[in-house]
Length: 340
Image 1 (cartoon, helix red, strand yellow):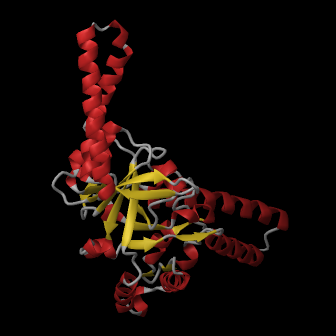
Image 2 (cartoon, one colour):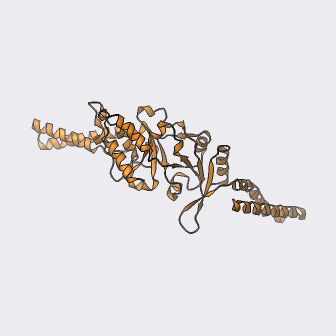
Image 3 (tube, rainbow, N blue to C red):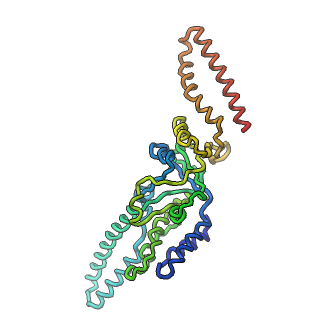
């Protein structure tokens, strides 16, 4: 990712205050569009939900508390805690509170803050919808984690098709850090209604550096306005590319191809490289699709071959001729595929 872009975006979002110029926020959104990657990818397992989304051109926005990272959208409230401790100390000093009692009071303040903070970020997470993308399509780990151990598929989206502002405005890069985002430090002036509404988005943008290999961008709907779309399917631009996993089954391949029939989506098949630990995308041609039709035939022939010794002579002759004809047709299809 472009580190300079990330740093400038983060700096703006940390320091934004509406009363200091709301037009600056619109300028930031327009500027951010220049850095949205041309292609973004979503790795999926094959199931009823993913096939339904593919068939209907929809996506599912989830709450971060359903994700595989227990720290997802968990933020620090250290500055708020320290502020209350400082206030407590000042009040205790004015009142002449004994030091041993002050320690007890501070412990009570810390416990109360921990409870309130947990309630607050649980509320924040439950009122947020997130859709995750990656800039990479060939990560071995991502295919393992999110695409059913390479038995699923990946959708490629051309972001120039994201014409609705609700898509581009809500699309942000993930910031990888070893330190949590301090929410209250950048929340703004709550009492004077000068709240930094970017703070909630920033909380969802921060992830541990352990996840950096994902090169993630997120579509983030936050606040009560997102309640109607969280854990619901919403309409979304059609993917332009689909990558079939290296270990995808015949049945799942057929299901995916049925979903995108007449949709003009380019199909690729991921393969294991011969001499390196890499995934390679290969065009999935019409010939490859036709070859799929032979799969059930070959399976049936294997069963018949196992029973060949129990056939009479005519049955064996017919079976052997079927095998020879099939081999000839497969060779012709293989040669045709090599030319494309």
